[in-house]
Length: 288
Image 1 (tube, rainbow, N blue to C red):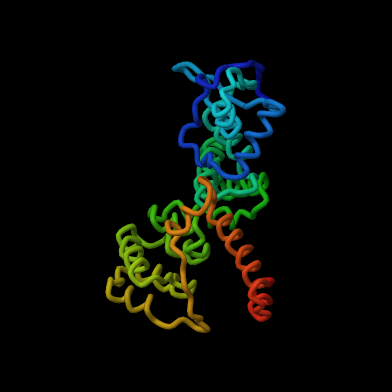
Image 2: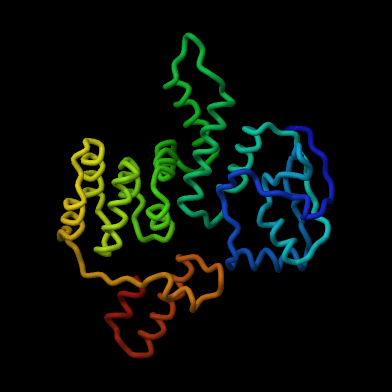
């Protein structure tokens, strides 16, 4: 373990990790953390490293730091470690990736940052090795320290090639993961066409359709007219759907509620409504 020093410092001296991929959200978990720190203080010191320009860069503990700021705590316990940029990146990702609620975009950029850091740490391949071998070892290293396979990690990293509006759809569960991975291979211009058509048609492509779009985008044969035709065609076993706009329902929930939390609450309320109105068939559907 790198040399470390334990101190108590002001939250004003603590700064967010550069390009930190994990967001601090004002959700139920954050509220519970604030209550815990209010009652017991910060039990586990934040891990930080010194900054050349002064103060400290947080490696692990962004949520604890924000909770302390909210509570007006003047001194925060930290463990200062001497780390290179790549060592700090790897430790930052390892410390956050196992959190209970991590968005697909957060995993995507975190895994990409870690993979690039691991490759740099491994160094350039020797004369008797090859870049493919180095990349394979880096992928394997990242997978060994996570609960996901190297293949799954690579697929998450592909999400970083999506344009922001489509990546947000993945985070909000408005687009499935596997089709999004295929779409990530489309050019940014073609992704913008697709995003506009998805909004217009209120539909997203299936996995088979996404693979077709990927091939057409890469071959340069994709057109906006074809996109519209594809998104309006009837999918196999398609059932009629309706959607709730997140902005319409967000105002009924406390700030910081995630789409998953809102969805769970809505289904819970629907179960109660179904029981009250005695619709046995509907109740069976809700309980599944």
